[in-house]
Every structure is written in C-alpha cells, then in structure tokens.
Amino acid sequence: MTVNRELFDQVMVPNYAPSSVIPVRGEGSRVWDQQDREYIDFAGGIAVNCLGHCHPALVNALKEQGEKIWHLSNVMTNEPALRLAKKLVDATFAEKVYFANSGAEANEAALKLARRLALEEFGAEKSQIIAFNKGFHGRTFFTVTVGGQAAYSDGFGPKPGDIVHCDYNDLAAFEKLISDKTCAVMMEPLQGEGGIVSPTDEFAKGVRELCTKHNALLIFDEVQTGVGRTGELYAYQGLGVTPDILTSAKALGGGFPIGAMLTTTEIAKHLKVGTHGSTYGGNPLACAVGEAAFDTVNTPEVLAGVKAKEALFRELLTAVNDKYKVFSEIRGQGLLIGAVVAEQYKGRAKEFLVAGINEGVMSLVAGADVVRFTPSLVIPEADIREGMARFEKAVAAVVNG
Image (cartoon, rainbow, N blue to C red):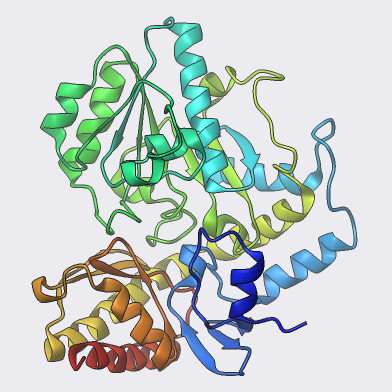
C-alpha cells in the first residue's frame, strides 16, 4: 500500500486539507517526514506537545502503563486517574476533577454543569450563557455555538439556545449583557484561535466581579493556555482572577488525548451519579501519561524556562521583523506567541506558514492575520535559534514573492 497525501483524498472525509508533508517520527523539537527531511517544530501539534516529541518521561509512562491496564469502565476507578486528579487539585483552586478525552468534552461538561446548577439552585429562567466573539471552545454543537465564530456553528440546523456574545476586552458591553438570568460566562484567559489576544487587567477582574454579583459561574477555558503554556501552571494564576470552573486538555497529555474539568466541591455536587459521563474519560493509559506530563511541566525550572524562552523568541522575531517589516505587533504570553501581519499582508498569515514548511520550520496561524508559535515548553535555545533562522528565510520568500 502506498501511504501518501493522495491516499488522504481517497479515504478521508474532506473536512481537512493537510499539507503534503507526512511526518513519521519526532524527537524533542525536531520532526522528520517520509523523505527523511527535518523540520523544527514551532507548532507543537497546536500547543499540545508541551514536552516535544517522544519525551522519555512520557514514553516510559506509556510503556509502563501499557503493560499493566489500559481501560476500565467507570463502574471502577483506577490509580493513575486518582493520582492525576490529586495533583491537579493540589496545584490549583479546584477541589474536584472530571476527566474527558478532549478540550471540547471538558468544555461540554463545564457548560452542562453550569446549566444544571442554575436550574437546581435558581430555576429554569437562569439559563443564559455569555461568551466572547472570536472565542473558541471546541467543535461539539454546544461548544461550537458558545464559541464566538458563527462560521463554525452555522449550517447544522437549529443551535442550542440562550447563548450570547460580546467583544473580548469590552467590559462596558459585557456589563450591559450580564444579568441575574446569566448562568455562566465562558472565556479564555488569553484568546488563542481568535488571534492571541491577552485580556486587560480591568477586563479580567471586571468580568469576575460581575459574575459574582449576578451569581453566574465564571468558566475559564484553559485548553490552550493551561499546563505551563503561559509560564504559569495555569494562566488564571498570572491574572490574579480565580474562575469557578476551569477546563484543561491539549498539553495535559503531552500529545496523548485527555481533557479535564476542574471545579469546587460545592459546584461539583450538581453532577451527581448518572448526570454526565464518558466511556474513555479517566482511562488509566491517558491518566498515566497525563501524570508524567504534569509532573514534568509543574516545576519551577520548566515554568521559569518558559518565560526565558519567550524573551528569546520575541528578541529573534523582532530582529527578523526589523529587517522585513512584515508584522505590526508581536503579542501573547509565554510560549503562546502571535505575530500580527502588517497591513500589506492582511489575510495572508498562512503564506508564512507554508513558506516555513518549505524552509524546514513548522508554525501555525490564529485566524487569517496572525502567525502563531506554540513550541515545546522545553525546546532548547539552539532549536529556537535554528528554527527562527529558517523562519527568516520563509519571511524573505513571502516578501520577495
């Protein structure tokens, strides 16, 4: 069987349009394709591979647990799930954890919990959910409707109701929307897919205060920002704003599918036996790998290293931009960095990604106007420098047409 890009068009549903490059192995921050061509990975599988590729701690956890037990039904619990939950609780505001397989599933659980609590404590009229334009919360019908990009939720028939949106960082607009009928507010503590947009201090604290005033639960979607990405274990810790519910996925498994919803005992009690579930959620294999990833990232050295690597990344990216003037702004936190394209390149962010692949460096976009970088949190300085040298060649190729 010839396994190539053409086979994709034959056998896969056409909802993706992947590159012709098919990676076959990786180590650290480097990846090799079918032709044994090497790439430096500044994409990290979209902020997932927080320890790069084939990190020994993750490989060992997978092998060890793979020889023990893979899956149990939720009629029983298991040791890796309990250990990981305890570590999550000890390291955050939370007291209770629910495990799922993805960020969308963790967000689905958070939204269902918020609706259930409001119904049981306040009554049926308290059902409104507020979220933010350009936000992204997953692809299930509920989460994609809460996400602030109608293009992703249009075209599938009637949407889940009582969901409204306003602009991120617009506290006045938010204050007009929220009321005692609001059951939950879902926000990213730094918008990822929407363009790497940080909240202002006033906005983050204002949203928290208004949620408290109106008995609305504040849900932080930390699927992309969590587990060290911003240089804090979770981004809320750097904002000084504590949510009522937090969701985590992506980096939580370091590349193995896992998601988690974290909350307090008082809120969690509304998901009593039978109200929600997941066949694979909390399976021993995912939780064992998740525990290894969490233990490796949650150290002062790795978290401080993220901030140092951010500084180097910004310095090198600024140097490239000083030469070519293609970006109007470099923004983000930690190793979630967005380079906003200048006016004459508007809508063309993807050209930098494609040119990068040709030069042997993998990056991402966040919308049509932002080039996004989400490399491994432990990427060596040498790889940052080499990757940025390749990215500079890509920028030159775009500039020179």
